[in-house]
Image 1 (cartoon, rainbow, N blue to C red):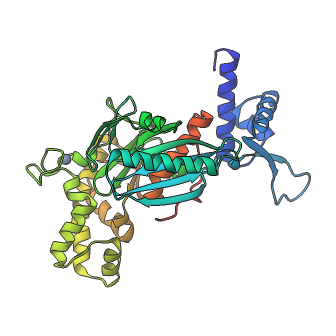
Image 2: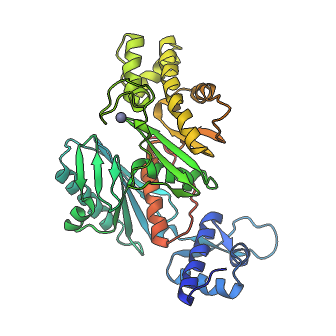
Image 3: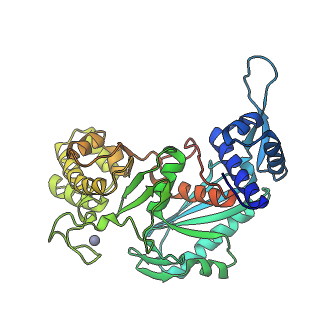
Length: 392
Ligand SMILES: [Zn+2]
């Protein structure tokens, strides 16, 4: 039973009602009362407030066989907008969703500089343009969440981005100085894990999302919450040592997982095996179409190194879901079969291992979803993947 003062209970009830409307898409007042356990009078007062605030609207089922069509409540997607930015070393991805998490705008900007001040100014200019564009909506552009390809301090500063060699950058106050407010930052792998849970695996309380790109980064969901560690740096699994005295890594150690199972290492090895230049995902696809044996060998070699790290991670976390976000694995039709062939230990247990449907958009749609959850102060959020699983 929730105890406390009246306004606190009212706030909790409101959050629960909103969470249920998100989960059911359309729901009547009577059903809301049933699923929340709140009486009809409480529902009625809260619903009236939400209607006045334009956060929800009344609608009816289109095909209702007999009798009076019940009035249903739905989230007013046009009330507020959210911006997710992926700050990568060579490009910026901007994604805007409405209040239901549907992508309404998407933009990719190539970066020709790695100078911090220039990139912050570029980000600020884009946010200002989007704020103007969505200013006629009831709440306008509410919040921006930036995905950082590096570590974040617990005081919300960029701790370190290896590719850019940026250390201790207070990006939020630097954006403030340029007139930009309501921004937060989060690690990109954390946002990808969060996105998988919110958009796809709604019921999964223990989920691991592993991004295989220029490095390897992981986001960890334990008991439904992101697990960030003492300094906020948890999930740097790419630097787990899988070969003692192996290849040197930029972190200072030798034999790190990402020196064997990140994208660049695949291409390095494939070049050696095929004795020809292979640089893009399209090249891999083409060779697979030609049933080239060399490319299959290169893929299977890469997967066997990938599986060493996966096996270790599974033993650490006993995850329910493992989501692998990797364009290379997505191209190779046998990737999951090959991975599972290596995960044969009777001790390492997981429920399922899948490839991400959100792909390269995971971190930015996760960023938008985080904005929605903060804005409405929701205990849990469920969104539909439909308008976000576009491959880019
Ligand atoms: Zn390392």
